[in-house]
Length: 222
Picture 1 (cartoon, helix red, strand yellow):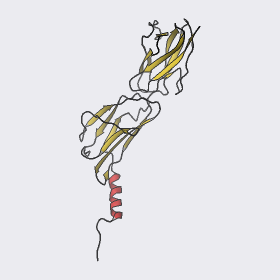
Picture 2 (cartoon, helix red, strand yellow):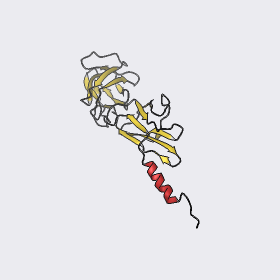
Picture 3 (cartoon, helix red, strand yellow):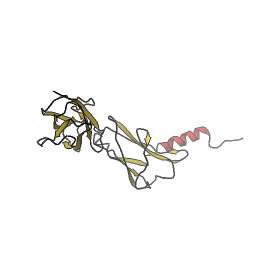
Picture 4 (cartoon, one colour):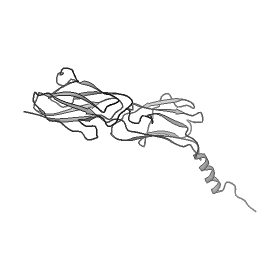
């Protein structure tokens, strides 16, 4: 009687058991314990069973990340810079294989880095019209509390320059000069002062490491 070896059901069982293995790559940053923190890099560690010669990947929202340093090795830790350009929740996924029918479980981290928004702690900015030569109080906001503060650089990006800016308690700076304000970890906004000197439409830019930058705008009116 003829008997076939390695029948299809057996292959399926073996494949299922192999894919049930624990991950060979672990995501250290973004930090799953602090999903609302700024994120400047992805950091991963590799189990001793990791084989860099087999297929593996770490991706951000489905786009493969490359350029890890130092080069990934079993038992090592590597990082790669991240640039967050859009608001909302993002996903880092790390996967590795160990042969044709061998796939380790993936490690996944969902994180929601801050998005800098003009006069709002939601994702919808609130622009501000200004009366010429009259100081006004405005703010830059984010959506969630964090474990770390955020140092935000604010600068007018429109031309010609129409407004002057001042940090809380500070003097107004010349038009076009940047200021820096800090959003504490326990709050979701930082106030600053603005004054319109030249009539017309102004635009501000908000930037900080590891966050989604934002803009603010309005009209300087008589």
